[in-house]
Length: 276
Ligand code: SF4
Ligand code: SF4
Ligand code: SF4
Image 1 (cartoon, helix red, strand yellow):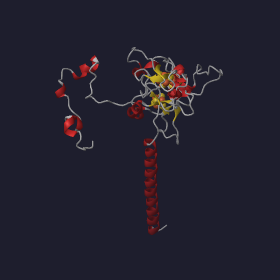
Image 2 (cartoon, rainbow, N blue to C red):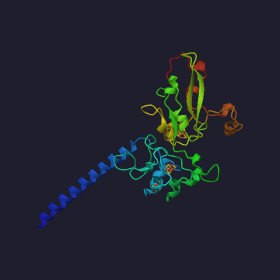
Image 3 (cartoon, rainbow, N blue to C red):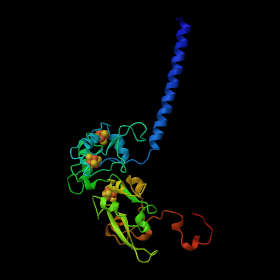
Image 4 (tube, protein in one colour):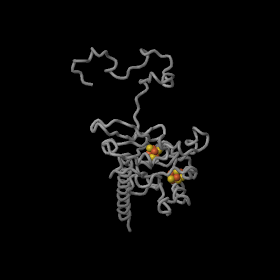
């Protein structure tokens, strides 16, 4: 091949590689967009905050292995080995490939006392220390994989029907879920027994979601950052000593006012057709 042939080949290769690079860029950005748009994901017990977890996890799969291969992972009813809770994300799962997660409605976390998944992690992405803060030793009850939330409109207990499936399935019965008695004004003679989840106790195991009798679970677990709100530091619970200590001896006038509306007296904005 002559000089011009070489040049043509060089140009063709360059164009090809630019094309491939651009395509790679497109594919990668498509992939990262897909991951960014991924559904909320539940991680194993002891997982670091999602952002830190994604950096720390080396995608070795040892946690899922430890979850799957347990001799004690036996279904009480059938006597057969149970499907493992943890899956490793693969293409099409809309989660970062190679990272462990679980879908509570399929297979929840059975809150194993010895927490083999977390213990197996070599990278610290799952950290036993996060489960040892209260007792000084790992305790699965300290796991905060997510938080169960109740969708009142589809929970049949809120319709007045008798159902306590989630309540009974909860390993922290009467602590993570309680049943709240409420008079049924519609019938006048019946009572509601309503499931209430306590966020300071719920581990996010998903056993309630799995047990829920409705077609699509009326109680379901979300990662905590999706399931919780934040009142803001400027709200202080006057009846709570710990919260009072947070603001110390500051006088109420010294506490910063955060928005235009609350910096004005009501007479300044009422009836003035000001939109906030
Ligand atoms: S606590 Fe048990 S069931 Fe839950 S993820 Fe770990 S090994 Fe699996
Ligand atoms: S064992 Fe740890 S590093 Fe390995 S996949 Fe599980 S979380 Fe990631
Ligand atoms: S996720 Fe459901 S079953 Fe698990 S601790 Fe929370 S309320 Fe109980």
